[in-house]
Length: 501
View 1 (cartoon, rainbow, N blue to C red):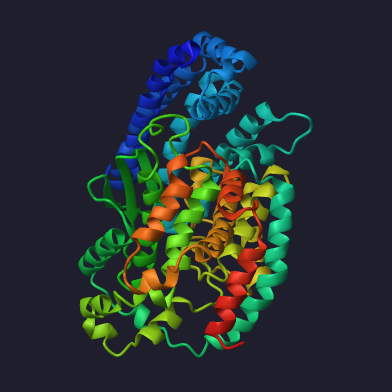
View 2 (tube, rainbow, N blue to C red):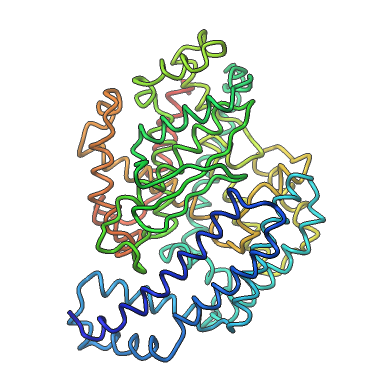
């Protein structure tokens, strides 16, 4: 054990505790805090953020980090400790560049901006939110500018915060492949999708029963209720304090059966990842997912690759029907599977079908690039957003609530996050391809036995936390780094079979 690392340990533990406290306020703010609390609670969040920054950016941490980066010290570190030092260097560089007063101001302001977004979405008034979004963007441009080196694009700085393996070059290549391969398939499928009657999905479904069935689904896929809780929020999300306290939320719509079910499977995928991280590294800088791209791969794997397959529903479909007999008695399993995989242009990302989902991400990615290239003004964003939906999907939002206001991410300044959803969706297909070579996945699903699948993910991905990055994990598990061909092949095989193309 490195004595230098031993000295660093208590300093990191203090910063972790402050970060955990801040996360708890964020959880409360989005789940149960009264609306009027935001402006006052934001001051508490600001103080905690300030203290967190001081705990990380100081002479003691700086000296220890510098020493631990020396070759001789590196030789004394374990692989996990090296990963922690690497992550600390990245975090230190990110935080040190920002003046402390600006860091505190931003965290206070983001808390308020999120509440303003929530109300603006409810009222369908983009103009009420626009001034707050403008200031959030100004902060993020300034912060990215502090960190830009060698004429790097400021947007790439933000992308790197979510997945270091995917910069603009890699994303442009990936998204061009999706546009060339998937958009034509989506158009072909959409013609046949019109014949699928999905009216059953939009009947009235008692919210209390939805909550009960969603709780069953979470447990079915592996959510551990001894280490996690489910709450309700305007936008479903997952938050982990450590691997023994993982919290997820869901949203329930009376006239949309699928919405809450697939949200809970999605968030459970995130939660299972966090719950499976080894005790030895939880509550450290590498105690979370490898990247947001890898994290989204796990949620999308559960939600789509497993959750929209006939094999997944075979053991439990009768339970769903018995929960809502008045609506589903006449709906066969085959009808239901076609319904949950119906592919048609949709304005709402979180309600999008599996085939068109990445088109939603491409639109957000292109809008974000325009924002950080100073190619669009705040007032023009709804118009640009609507134009891109018309161009790529042939539909145009009639309200800002179903357009530019639908996502919470920008209110928190999470620019660069959205591509992670697409990366994760593609990675899920790649992992599925190599998993099928090693175990009878379909048979396990038909038996209602998800344990071997969870164990495979735990042993090959989850337990390592952020010790490895996305491409390192894929290389170890699948024998190659990210390859979008698996994603294209998966979608083509699935939808050509479903729609007899």
